[in-house]
Image (cartoon, rainbow, N blue to C red; front, side):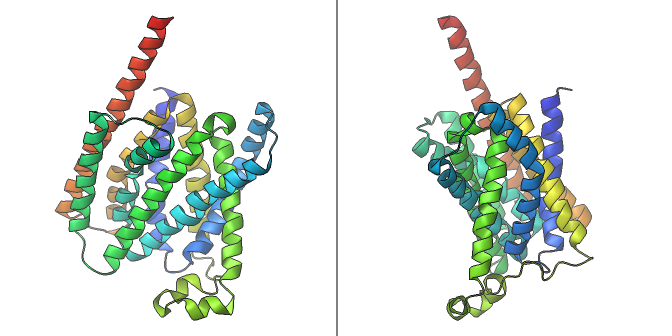
Length: 319
């Protein structure tokens, strides 16, 4: 088996446990606190490889580089992953996993706007079928906390897609490991400031009572204990550190479109793990939604593969 496929399988397996692990400690550790430690430890794991890559590329940073990583940190860590953790509080882990995994579909309109990529019929078909799958999943949910969880899940997927597009604009300059390591660190800096600001009296006065436990007086250590420290370390080291490492290794040894298969395996694997470990049931509408999302994913990956193949043939023919 080619090593890129080994990386894809390992990354998909690891990412598919992210929601299950997060669900088990969602009520014990504040979502912003969890993200702070998760991405700090993950960044430390990636840091030696990121520094080595910077030296290899002879990159000297300036003010624009710092602003760039503050933007990617805001999108990827502060917004997307905070929405993700909030979603886990309000709905099933399997639902969050499925809806987050449609983030490659949301990249299509962002790619058109920011990267000036053109749509084709395959892209439109993939987007339409995947949106239908999302609607099936939404229709299987009840009004109340579950709907809030779905909205947070979709917000997480959209902001993660935008994070991916912004990263892609400078991927050739930095490389995936550098982008994610310093995005994690920049996002953690912003989370640190947000957590400090949550202790200001005005935040408690302005925040609605039902959200005060999430956004007011966020602690750095409270809630972390012997019972959940192993899960926190698993999310930090295995999921954030090695999960992203395998994903970027898959991208480096293949292509972004092939590596994106990780997010199309996740909607299949995560509900199975959720059923086995959390005893979460999978409604018929959700299963239909999974099927539609997978069909849309196949359209998109196949379309990208055909486009890349045609481009390579044109280059050879021109040469």
